Length: 491
Image: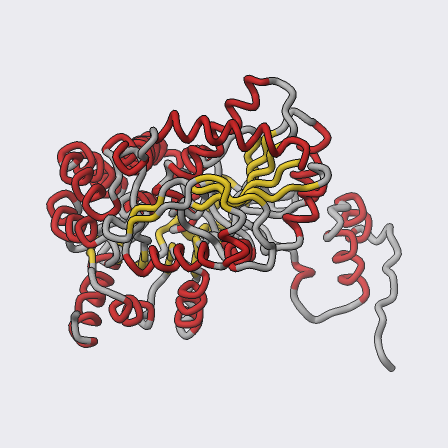
């Protein structure tokens, strides 16, 4: 770990480099985006090996969720950068004669990105794409819980990006704590709500703006679909969004399923069938499912299942291998709502199913809990769709699929309430790391004489007409054809 003095010296050097204008030009920004694309192309094999080592991800999962999505995002930013950087003309009223105005995006300065371990490349480089596209100097702090991935980022990024403006700092919680105590122009943090509160508290000392990407319990609402095809597709997508997304260790993974009691039996049987199709009779040997990141998190999940009432609700799976940190896909039916598994974000391959009398009850169920990062609703009922959008609050709502909203560059990704604040992805990443500066230009030739003291009722009447853009009233008042209203003055 660097000493406080060394860290401050490095950061001061990065600030000076930024204030020298080195990162502001379009050519610098494009060169950084192209560098990231070269990194993703040339180091793909190493990245896949690191993800397999740290999390047990198959290369197909690694490419789908991290490498491929980053290539998409970097190409999108590269193709859109000119438009993003352009100033936007602001419309002024007719009264603003010989005046022009525009909105100019400018970089914030020196920003800090603290990423998470579950998608160690995706959650590090996705915000980095937006930060460099916006012209910032960036310090990236990857998670120490994915050590091979963190090391690869620290060693490889200087070969592809401007090392005077982009720096990777590794280390554990002490390093993160040291970093957040510094003065930044922006902090983007991905992780738990507990640590997010600590980051926000530290940032408040310097009035540093923060974007917090947290998480929570994302529900899947499964309506009683009449079509057998729709049922099969819905079940496949729910299971994919739970067990194939880092083994459920994802902030946008399905956390639990809400289903009508009469539809429960059909849903359970389909889930068992599709788990077999996806992961085989021995999921650990299929190499199609990631493992738990470390022993601490493994024991946390094991403890959730050791609650006798929770254990009794297991209807499929439940086996665990502590040596390999592997937990097979596990389904629970109606675990106690007051149990930890239904109170805390699960972040693992345990999928509770909660039965309801009618699917419309899912709205009150979701609203009785903290606002989730995402809600997934599988239905053909237009009325339910409308109510879900209008009567619930969440970072996003996706109908008839799950997790894919993360890949949409045209949509903001972020939470609300306890699931986070702020958003990024695509243009929203650029905006997150930019300041929209108002620029106005006026001529010396024309002015409105009544804007300056001394005050009288005549000027007051002009103001009354002027602020409602009553130009005829202004003209009539100036010509003395409109009587001035007497101002309210204390005697």
